[in-house]
Length: 399
Image (cartoon, rainbow, N blue to C red; front, side, top):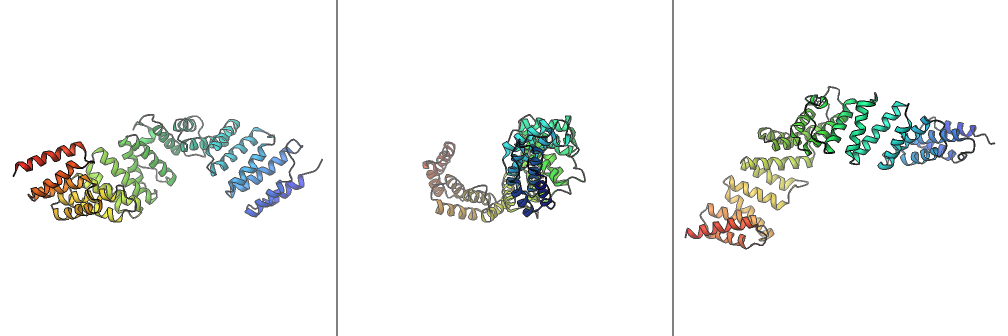
């Protein structure tokens, strides 16, 4: 029987320093290993594991997957060895976005690491995390619950686990978390040493709460992100914008305006976020009848936006409405005439507002012509046509 101990030593020597050349050399030597059941199963599996682990450290996940898979073909010397192989294979599959296969191997690792808490708990965490990414929030919440309540792990942050679980509960449609929840109750202020990763989890929970219309909770969470000095600056900018949306939905208008302005002015707000903040601020100011500034913002948005929320024609139309409401009917008319020239009679609302402008000047003949176009336009809504017909009859009564 051939002695493979020399080959094992050469592979170990190759991997004494982990770099691409060393892994390539060890991988080539692994081709000489005996097949399973040839009497060297433990030695071969160990060589393959060493090579795979070195490749994993270099994030050569495809190569590591190959060697971990080969190692699994050899009978495991004990459950720990098998659990460890499945866990690391899951890591490599996760690194390649092969999520379903990764989940399968992590679950095997959980089942086999019965008396190896660290591997069991880490494998369960990765299972829950990937289930969350796959949208299976109900199962993910159950796995996070095990880690929170039954099988806590010193390697994992209890706060992070509970934030993930609450996010899954919300995403699964399991109702709104009560504000009395001990985790949520501590969200007035994040711990001083909070990591950026935890801030991300708080922000994700806030988004989930917002999506479930739990606006009081999402407001509290966004404020916690804003108040955290350790939060990355871009999180502050985004949280100010999301807070503005939530306050707007809750009818807290003084806070709404301030939040949108802070997001718009924030030095770390990226262009798309500034576009959204500018647009929503313009809409808000239009609602509260601050028409002049709203018009300026709609104009700025139409000219500068990198990714417009609405088509350019709709932005210009809103600008024209605000100019008219701000008593600048000439500017409003110029915008509407430009839309006419560009789009012909394809926008019924243009005729509606042109008619309003002409009526404000007591130019009833021109207003009547606009109402006629509006009534005859095939794209006009029934209610719009009815209102135009009523105004047209009123105008005719004035002559």
